[in-house]
Each structure stands twice: as structure tokens, then as C-alpha cells.
Length: 386
Image 1 (spheres, one colour):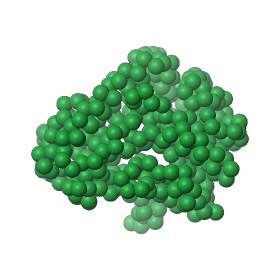
Image 2: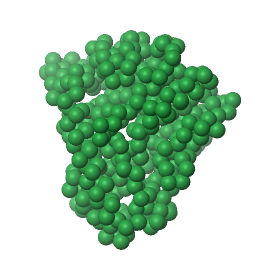
Image 3: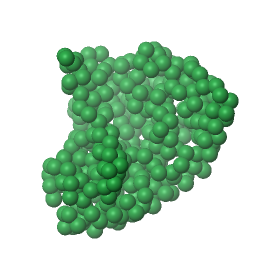
């Protein structure tokens, strides 16, 4: 059997693979602690549950328009205007089966073979492989030693004649750091001047702590939406604890959005009608659910930081958002894959190697699960390493 060169070139998703490992160990009755996950433990919003039940009770779950239902688009437009400073029309929105598909739609729509897509490390594990799926070349910008954020100058130094887009996740998975207003303003100016697309992966944009806010790129644009190079990707998985519903969306200029809709029509048709109804219900519920989730995650963040501080040689940039920490364990072991494997074997603790995110020596530790698991998991790590 001959597989394509593209398929053979792709790596497996490290996070999904480790989720499978953790679930298998639990099924075997092993005392595993999963600090590698990316799913909040909170139940879905009441509005999402009610809309799901209403559709199931009616007994009709059918195809929807490729780009999403009118009720959900209405809620997305209102949500985007409130939190991101721009009001999109229906033709600026494409609802997708998760934010990952929305990013794929974008890449296939703008990248020609050999085009370059820039993003900073540490990056979400899927970025390089998704760029490859669009026959593009991923270009990684790494921060200075000891830092988790890059500068606009470092990004500009990687520009070439083939640069087509920049992708930015802020607050970011895995570091949980938020890029500043000054950085976002400069990046928007650079992209508009050079006519380079700026994809803002806003999936964690509202999950920020300590009174901080993640700046919206639209606030610094000098172009109307239908002339904008900015693309916002969002969804309900993280902010509304609805990972299993698989609903994401993009907001972009009409021409690009229509291209993305054509891509989606040929790949997956429309997102689930049931999931779209639930997503509309979640967005209508407003701030209460998100504020409760943020408070819970901020508390767990503080627990994680306190526990990690007990390790003698760990360095940690305190997460400003998301539900991940990205401590530097290089004083114990520079090979993060080796360290992660050893912690799983000796301590039954699942972590994600930093090399998968583009920075060696780190581990991604999630704090979106139960507080007792955070304490127990880091305690096991400390007993092994110290």
C-alpha cells in the first residue's frame, strides 16, 4: 500500500495521543493523573442544554446551510461586536465543525504551494501540520531564551516574498501568556502595510485572569471589515466548556469568507444542526457562565503555580489566561519527551512534552481538571524529581 507523501509527512497530534493514553490507563484501573488535557470539567451552559433538548424533543435534526444557521450567526455577530469591537454581517461568518476546521478553511483558501505562514513558539501543536496540509511552509519564530513571547521585530525578521499569513494565539496554548496592546497594534499595522493576513486564534480570548483583557486586533485596524486582512477564529469549546459539540467559526472579509465556505462545502458540508442550536443557546446566556468558569480556572491556576513553586529547579512564567501552564523543567532534563515518558512510567502522571509546542525543556501541565488532581499530579512529579 502506497500512502501519499503528504500523509507520510504529517505528525500525530501529541495532545490527542496522550488523551488516548490517559483514557486507556484509566480503563485499565491504573491510578493515572491526567495533567495533559484541554477540557474544562464544568458542565455545559443551561442555555446549550435547553436548546439541545428542544431540538431532540422535536425529533428533527437536519442539514443546515453550509456556513451555519441564521440564529447562530445572529448570536455570533452580537458576541463579536460586544467582545471584539466589530459587527460582522452574515456573509462575514462561517460556522465550522470546531475552530480547527475554521483554521483549515482559512489556510486552504489563502495558501498556495510554497507560501509561508509565520507563527511564534510556543505554538499549538497542530499549527505546523495544518500549514503543511495546505501545501504551505510553516515558519516558526522562537522567543529569546527564558521568554514565552516574541517581539514584532523578531516576526518581521522572518518575512520573505512568500509570506502569506501570520497566526497568533493570545492568550496562548501552551504558555497562557497574553500579548500586549502595543504588540497587537504594531502587528496589525505591519500586516495591513504589507497586505499579509493576520489570523487571530481567539479561542481562549475571554479566559484571562487578574483583571487583564486580551486585546482585539480589530480595535487597531484602519480598514473596514470587508477590506480587512484580519481573521478571527473562535468557538464554544473552551469558553463555554462545550468541547464535544465541535462548533467554531471565523469572522473575516466577505470575499475570504465565501472562499472558506466553498472549501467547507467540499470537505464536511455543514456543521451539526444540534450543535449549532446548543452554541446559539450558550452565546445567548451571556457573561454569567464565562465569569464563573474564569473564577474557577483562576483559582486552579493559583493552585498549580503554588504547587509548582515547591519544585526546587522549575522556572514558570505565571499563566495570564487559558488553562495551561508551561513550566521549564530543563534543569532536571532538557529532553522533554524523555521527561514526560519517565513521569508517566514512574508516577502515572500524563504531561505533554514542550518539544511538541516548539520549545524544548518545558512540559505543558493543564489545570482545567479537578483541583485534587493538580495537587496530586504535581506532588508525584516533585517526589520523582526532587
